Amino acid sequence: MKWDDIDQQVCSVARALSIVGERWTLLIIRDAFKGTRRFDDFQRTLGVTRHRLAERLQKLTHEGVLTRIPYQDRPTRYEYRLTRKGLALYPVLVTLSVWADEWMDDGTGPPLTLWHSRCGKETTPVLTCSECDDPLRPEEVSARLGTALQSFVTSCRERGDAIPDDARLPSAAMDFHQQQLDTLSLHSKKVNHD
Amino acid sequence: MKWDDIDQQVCSVARALSIVGERWTLLIIRDAFKGTRRFDDFQRTLGVTRHRLAERLQKLTHEGVLTRIPYQDRPTRYEYRLTRKGLALYPVLVTLSVWADEWMDDGTGPPLTLWHSRCGKETTPVLTCSECDDPLRPEEVSARLGTALQSFVTSCRERGDAIPDDARLPSAAMDFHQQQLDTLSLHSKKVNHD
Image (cartoon, each protein chain N blue to C red):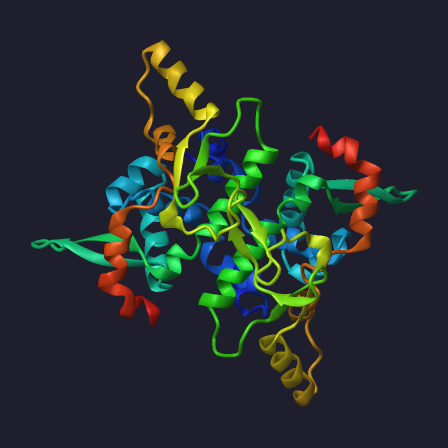
């Protein structure tokens, strides 16, 4: 499988990465959250080549993550703004950020802290369950076949096709395996120092 | 700035992406969560080239996201397991997945649903505030200078250096701008159809 085909996997992580999994793309989106809108501003703050930036912005616009709005006539120039689909990527940026703050701290602490205006406190975002509000721990979450994968598997069977590895994969993706816990008890000292 | 230098940005999103922002890397981690451990199994299910896969696994091991454990002597062969640092990437995979389920549904529904064993219900993970437990909405969260960025800025000033664009950037990264709301009211119909 080529990278360009990963959106063909019946897997939500792969689908998401087919849009935001390229170098620079999530940094462009980070900057858009900060308020950056214009090509030259993205280019200056990211330092990416103009060609690469144009390609990324075009894809994000095509996919409806950004929308182009004219801000000048003769010649018409456009700026880029996050759509609702783009704004919905906020939790992805935040979870990446929380992870780096916890695991990549070089001893100087976090670059930023987050402030929640609703409660007026410094916040550490937590991924929780929509039903019981408890924090979601990977060992307490299991994946079940959803409708998309069910119909894919059914149609493979009806055609007499083997179910390909890369489609079968997500049927158990993000299930937490007991072996992982074994790893931890064996190697927790080591990995804590990494 | 070259991509290989993005870990130099005093920004947690950039730092995280310097490890997990390459093509394939988050899919390797997804598979590791599923229980894949061995080189040939990663290679078969991902379809990535062996050279690329080796490079990615080496980086993830070097960065302490995966750990190599020998499973065979003569010749010694290793398998790869998630460390605590790797397991802590779970919220990143989940938020990507939730985003794709909401915004990339082709009409067939989600590939997978998630089940929370603690409460016994199908769950939709939500990013919430550690202090008040409310869902975090980007317009209610603002970023403030953390210690790492503060000391970086101070040392720039002490040396008489200009504060570079790519370091100043994160000082407001992920602040939510009122303009974004303007975009939404203007373009919400359009983006809903994307």
